[in-house]
Length: 148
Image 1: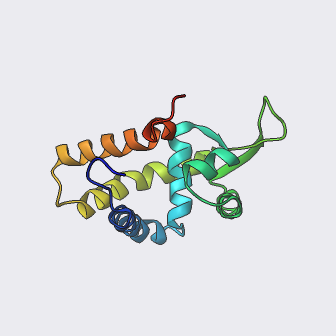
Image 2: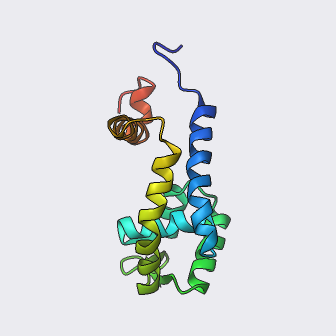
């Protein structure tokens, strides 16, 4: 039973599609897919990430994460290494070329995505981002009323 206004998942999906479409127009011109761009973006943000971490962060399946990573490795945009603390894990890092690609595209992609959300003021976009971030980082057990 919901005690407040419910979130329509289709609205969130439509917003995601709009943002991906805005990014897609630019990354396609550079021979990238949106998933490849998102992986570059994630690696630029965190420095290095395990394949499992990328799968979770990017909301991809394991096989899709592997295909995206393979393509980026083939394009010399990322390096695949073995984790220093657990040799069973594979870690990806941006190459110098990958960092340059990210820097070259990120400003234009942000501008495209801002334009795609032009119906919102800057403060509204910031508030939306804070609220969505808080929602996904909240412990789901607390949302259901289960003690941790």
